[in-house]
Length: 344
Ligand SMILES: *Cc1c(COP(=O)(O)O)cnc(C)c1O
Image (tube, rainbow, N blue to C red; front, side, top):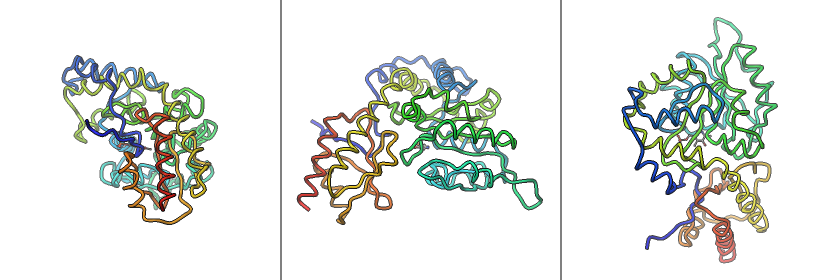
């Protein structure tokens, strides 16, 4: 039998559920470029409702959705205000320069929390030397493991709209943010003009993300998606899994958070480990070892014992809980970490 690994590299590694596989097999499909695919239409309607927007568009990935949002909201040469530690800056291959052709102006958030005054100071006035500021990007939940509360989002909304600037939310994990904040995802999205969220992370669909906003914005984005090569044909097979993701997988995300709490607490009990306790809002646990060793040796020890992890970034490890990892699995992970430290 194939070895079963405990995979805590990310929540993107989640496998589709049996129900998703059945829905995909049975999906009624058509040519989506003609807007003929009933399953895609159903997904887009449901997705728009989930975040309280007029319309939504199915896109191949979260990166695609973010970059399409920038491309749709802006003109070439505009300036976009964005967190220095955001996915758009760090992990999208510099696509904003290639696709939208915009200049990024970075703000520095504290643990993922933006400062309204700093954002205000970055919005450009009219001047012959300045590019126009047309968009502000937020990230919630933030990739470093925190959530931004609604009061801050509301202040940024008021600021942006008073200056005629739009807001895009990278809500790859918006439903994790909703669970952590104890609010509906709609309330988070109510403070922004457009939102992207992923079906393929904790929600466990095999592929796909959603971009949502006004009808006008989405109809413009639909054409931009075609330009970017994302007009797909009988893509209802993938949308079918997305529908199951939205109907059945949203509420259980809180379980991943509880499991992450357990993992964080258990790791923090180990003398040689320091957990980043101020970044513990969602399904991610960030920590450092207080002792030095070869990181490759640690990774191979984990793998030999059936646990897949990512290498550290800047000396920091990230373990991510997800639907394919149980509480018992996490107990095992902690034991395996302890075993490594004893040996070492
Ligand atoms: C995962 C992620 C994305 C986009 O993900 P894809 O891998 O392109 O689907 C965007 N923003 C954040 C914060 C993410 O975590």
